[in-house]
Every structure is written in structure tokens, then in C-alpha cells.
Amino acid sequence: MNKQSFIKGTLILLAAGILNRLLGFIPRIALPRIIGPEGVGIYQLGYPFFIVLVTIITGGIPLAIAKMVAEAEGAGKRDASKQILHVSLMLTLIAGALFTGLSLLLAPWVTGVLLPDERVYQTFISMTPMLIIIAVSSVYRGYFQGKQNMIPSASSSVIETIVRIICMLWFAHLLMPKGIAYGAAGAMLGTAVGELIGMIALLLQYPGEGRPRNKLLPKPQKVISEKTAKEDASSNKGILKRLFGIALPVTGGKMVGSFSYLLETILTNRSLAMAGIATSVATAQYGALQGMIIPLLLLPGALTVSLAISLVPSLSEAAARNDRTTIHKRMNQSLRLALVSGAPFAIIMFVLAEPLCLLLYDNAEISDMLKIMAPFALFLYVQSPLQAALQALDRPGRALLNTLFGAIIKMSLIVFLASNPAFGIIGAVIAIIVNSIAVTLLHGFSLSRLIGFRFRLLDYVKIGAVMIIMGACVLYGYKHLPFSTAPWLQFWASIAVGILVYFIMIFMTKLVTPRDLDRVPVVGTWFNKFSRR
Image 1 (tube, rainbow, N blue to C red):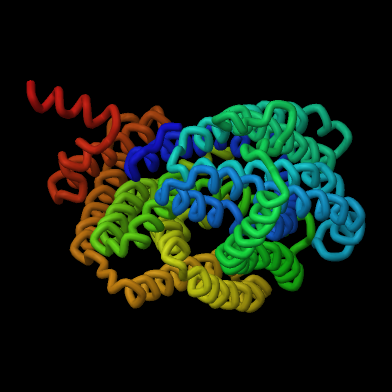
Image 2 (cartoon, rainbow, N blue to C red; image 1 turned 135 degrees about the vertical axis):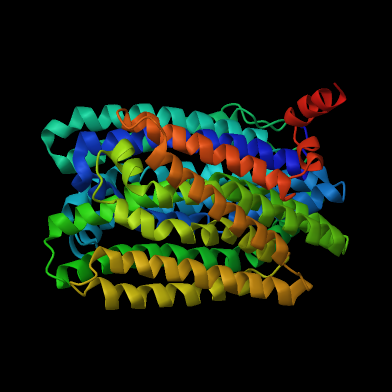
């Protein structure tokens, strides 16, 4: 198995993440045209409850596995890594089977009473089989990430995305004649097929003699005697204790986020109803926010998620060596990369919100939500690395409290603002913005107190200045470039001008240096050849 460096591992995940996000916009654009915004709303309404179940089953298990495997590999205990995988897989399979049965049993009550639109029943049933699939996939992803081999996770996620897109749109199209509810259920069924194929692709990459052929579980590598069995049982208990010790606080933090998402769905729709908005309209508005605007804002999140995944084993190893220099270096790298990569997206989404929504969704009415949220998306981009750092440094409880505090603020603001006819859905938008700012600042403060981490304020000043310059260039280009007879050509030309200016400025301000490029696989090799010439 090939172990990658922090930068290379991040870039592997980043490449897969960017490809997945770009491919992911195919259904984001096409699905509303097949099932409409209301159908997208029904599709989105089922997800929050599903996310809660996935969090209960897997939660912090992948991160705990990654951390424990990284520690075992660092100590040269490869057999321990296999045993961690085996115990974790048994645990998640049992939990997955249990909650799958409960979900099918309670589906009528959940969709008829708990969720605000009973038409979500078919979608809810379609998503239930994914619980076991995701349980297995998450364990193997954590195992590979603990070995700092990001290729299996990256490749399987790309395969899953491609299959999901094809099946999602195909099934939605096939079932749409039966009604909007069935069209949304078809889209969810396609998602389940994608998850299944992604899991199979991940299992096929499990290396070594213990690789499963006809079974999900790896074969034990030891000859089991009575004495060995007792040692294994004791070791398994130790693994479970350590696993729960790491996973439970992380799961708690994720549960706060998952329940927050579920409550956000319920409260937003109920609050919009209190504001006098019909259920079908509220469902469509919520579908536009969660199914169109939020995914667009999170497009640069491909890098931040990659950074967060790579940070856990990297910081865990550094912390085990008490190497604070490496910890500070990795954190500054991560935050700078997150901001530099996310800033141009935020500017484009702010300046060109209306033409962008018209181009992607053929709907300019939702552009106000995008324009309001775009400048604050930077807080979301740096939040993932900060939270991953707290978890890797054994402070998941602090991340949990920060997330809980932010969730309380968000829920309160949704009820207060979205129920006011003067705000409506914009009230929910404001609540999400305040939440992202509060949680990010709290994570940063916690990390600063924990390891004495100091943010490089000059970098943030530079990024702010570069963003202003780029925004001015994009706006000027969109208004004055000589393509007024071809609006979309003018749209893309103004973006090209802005991106060119942005790249020049980040090199001039040394936010990105030749040394940074030199460390990038492939690009670094090309850069060295070019510079020598």
C-alpha cells in the first residue's frame, strides 16, 4: 500500500473532490428540470432524518479508525490495524442492520407526523437501504485514510458519483409520470445504487492476504488457540474501548449538526407556514435553498473536506511526537489553502449571482439568497480544517460544544426570522450565515487556546484585498466587455478576466509561492522543468 505525504494525499482527495463537485452539478442542474423545485424540496426533506441515522451508525467511527490505524502504523503494528478494521466493521454492520429495520418499521410515522410533508414517504423508503452500505464504506475509508493512502477513497467516490448521476436522473425520469413524490423517490433510489457501486469499488481495493473475496469481513491472520482467543478477546475489548473513547465525542458533535439539519428542515417549513406561505411553496423554497444554493456555495468545500481528512492522521502523528512545529505548519497551510481556493468562488457568486443562477438553474429569482450568502462562505471553507484539528488533537468535546452553541443560535433565529412575513426564507438564510460565523470563530479560539496557535493576520488582509480587486475586475468586465450581444460569452469572459487577475495577485502578494507549486505532484515537476528552461 502506498502512503502519501500530507500535501499529496490532500491533492488526491482534492482532485476527486473537485471532480465529484463538478459532476454533482449535472443532477443539480438537470434534476429541477425533471421533477421541478417542489420535487427537489421533497427529495431534500427526506435527507435530514437519514443523515441523523447515518450519524448514529457511523458518526466518529471513520475518524477514530483513521486515528487508531495511523497510531498503529506509526508504531509498526500492522496486525493491530487489521484487527481495528475487523472490530469496527462488526460494530457498524450490527448497528446498520438494526437501524435499517427500525427505519422501515417507523417510516409511516416519521413521514406522516415528524416531517412537514407526507409526500416524502416514498423517498424515505428508497433511501433506507443505504444505511448498511454507508456503514461498511465508512469503515474501509477510515482504514485507508489511517494508512494515509487516499487513492481508494478518492477513486471509489468518483465511481460512486458517476453511477449515482446516471441512475438518479434515469430513475427520476422513469418514475416522474407517476407523480412528483415518485420522481423524487426515483432520484433517491439512484443515489442508493451509486452508494452500492462505490462500496464495491472500495472493497475491491482492500489489500493483503486478508482481502475479502466473498465476504465483507477481513479474514483473521492469526492461528487461534485457546490462549490466543483470550488475548484477542481482551484486545477486542481494548479496541472497542479506545474506539468509543474517540468516536463518541465526535459522534456527539456530528449529532448536533445532524439534528440541527433535521430541526432546520422542520422549523424552516413550519416557520414559513406561520408566515402565511403555502406548504407547496415552502417546500419549493426550501428545495431551492438546500438543493441549489447551498451546494453551489459548498463547491470549493472539496478542498476543505480533503484538507480535513488529511489533517487527522497527519496531526495525530505530529501530536504523538509532541511536534508542535509541524502542527502549526500544517494548520497554516490548511487555512491558507482553504481561503485562497475558496475566495474566487465567493467573489464570482456574489458579483454574478443572478446570471449564474439563470445559467445553472434557469431561475433568477433565487439569486438573492446566493448573493447574501456568498461573502460569508469563507467561514464555511475554513471551518472544516479547524474542526478536524480539534478532533485530531483529542479535543472533540470542545468542537461539540462549539457546534451545539452555533446550532442553538441558528434554530432560534430561524423561528424568529423565517416566521416573519417580512423575511420569509431570507430569515433562514440569515440564520445559516450567523451559525457559520459563530462556529468558525469558536473553533479558531479553541485551537488558539489549546496549542497557542496564532493566525497569520497578514495573510487574511492580503486575501481580502485580492478579493476586492478581483471583484472590481469581474464587475467591470461583465458590464463593459464588448460581448453585450452574447450575454453568456460576456459572463464567461468576465470570469476569465477576474481569475487571471486573481492568480497574478496571489503570486504578487506571495499567498502562493513557487515553493508551494514545487510541492504539488505533477504541477511541481512541470514547474521545475519550466523554471530551468
